[in-house]
Image 1 (cartoon, rainbow, N blue to C red):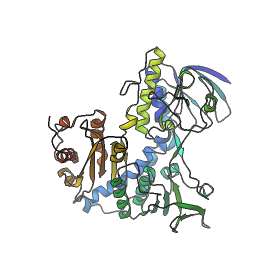
Image 2 (tube, one colour):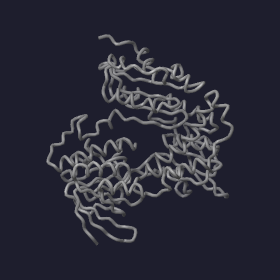
Image 3 (tube, helix red, strand yellow):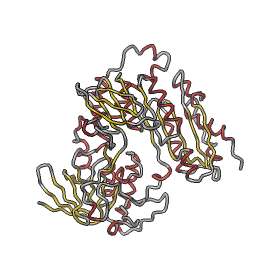
Image 4 (tube, rainbow, N blue to C red):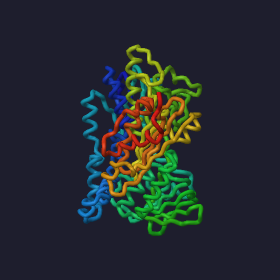
Length: 482
C-alpha cells in the first residue's frame, strides 16, 4: 500500500471532474483525479456524445427532405450501419487514451480504481488488481461521480434485465422493436433516434412528454413521433414486465394494453452515484443526493459545510441540474473556489460572483434533440407564476418568420417568451422547431444578463434567419416606453 499527498483529490474523471481538476491545477494546486471506468465519463462514452451522434444522421436526412431540390436528390434510406460506425468513432471505440493524454498535458495525475473517503481529506483507492493507494488532500476532496439510471419498482422489471441509457447508446445491433419507459429527455431522444432507424418504437409515459418544459413542447414532440411511426402511450402506468419465450419483453400497461418488443429501455430518471463512498462517516446518507452551497461545498443536515468545508460535490451528484454543461459550469466555480480558499482568499457566495454557480437556480439552458428540437432556458410560465412573479407570456409561430421559409418548405414551430412585468426583463424562453438549439444562447444571455426589454429591442436580428423570431416576439409584446 502506497500513500501520496496532494492539494486536491477529485473523485470521478467525467467532464465535471476533469474541469474541477483543471481549474484547481490552473490555480497552482497539485491535483489528482480518481476514476474506476473511462476517463471522460458518461457524457463522452454513453450519454451526450453517442446519443447526439445517433440522432444527427436521421435529423440531417429529414432536414434535406424538407427542402426542394435537396429532397429530390435524396434517393436512399438511412444507412444505420454507417451511423453506428460514426458513433463508434465519436466515442473513440470506448477507449480513453486521448483523455488520459489530456490529463497528462494539464499536469493532473490519474489513479485508476474505486474510491472510498476513508477519513477527513483522505481517499483510499482500490484498483482492479487489488492494489491499494491512500491519497491525502491538503485542501479539498471533490466528489464528481455523477448519476446512474434509475430502475423503478415495477414487478418483474429488474429481473427482466432491461436496457438502460448506456445500452441504448452503445448498441451494436438495432432491434426490430423497442419499448421505452419514460417521457423525459432520454426517452424522447432515444424514441426519435430509433424511430429514425426504422425500429418499431413504443414510448410509454405516466403523463405527457417532457414534463419540465412548456406543455406545447411535449405535445409537438408527441405529434412528431407519431408521424415518424412511433406508438406513443401517454398518461398510462406500467403495471408489470416479463420476458417472453423468445427472449423479448412483454410490458403490461395500466389501460390493459400489452406491448411486446425485442428490447426494453428504462429511461425513468436518475439516482446519484454516491453509495459506497464512505460519506456516511461524515453524517451524510449513503447513496443520497448531496446538498451543496453555491460554491459546491457539501452541506450537512444543518446547512453548514461538512467538517469545516473540505468536501465538495459537483455535477449530477448534487441534483441541481443534471446536465453536462451545468456540471462543467459548477466545476469551474468549485475549482476556482478551492484554489482561492487555498490561497486564503475570501470566497463570497453573493449571486453572480466569481466563485458561485448562480445560474443553476433560474437560468439553466437545455436542448432536447428530438424531432422537433426543444430549446429552453430559465423559467416556464407555470414555474414563474409558482415563484410569485407577475408575468406576461408572448408566443409566436416560428414558421411565420422569413428565415424559417429558407430552412424548410413547411417549417413548423413555436417560440415563447416569459416576461417579468415588474422588471421588464425576460425570465424564460422556449423554442420548439428545427435547429432551434442555435437560438438558445441569445435567450440565455438575455435571461442571465437581465437585459431590459427596451434595450433588447435594439438587438437587431439578421435577415433572413430564424433569429428574426426575437423581433416578432418583441413586436408582439409591444415596444416598451421609457
